[in-house]
Image 1 (spheres, rainbow, N blue to C red):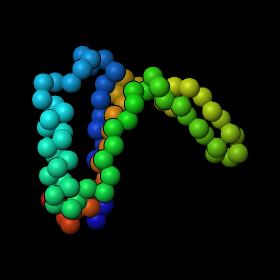
Image 2: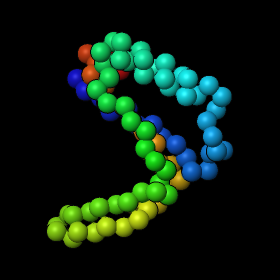
Image 3: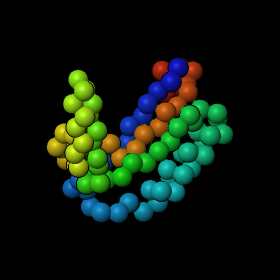
Length: 88
């Protein structure tokens, strides 16, 4: 089975990562890679740099900024191949 794990951040969180946060993320990525579970891992830019493209019903909308205004945003994601929901 494939699972999408979203990394959620908040615009009002103190800037910068917690000490050791990137080291922990790198170690987690290494563990996933070694287990053959990682399909995709990606970090995303802040919502302030977002560009929305919306072509639903042929609208061809292009706008700077978030699609939906919120303090929380998706800062990254993993797509993993894991055998069971319990393991995930």
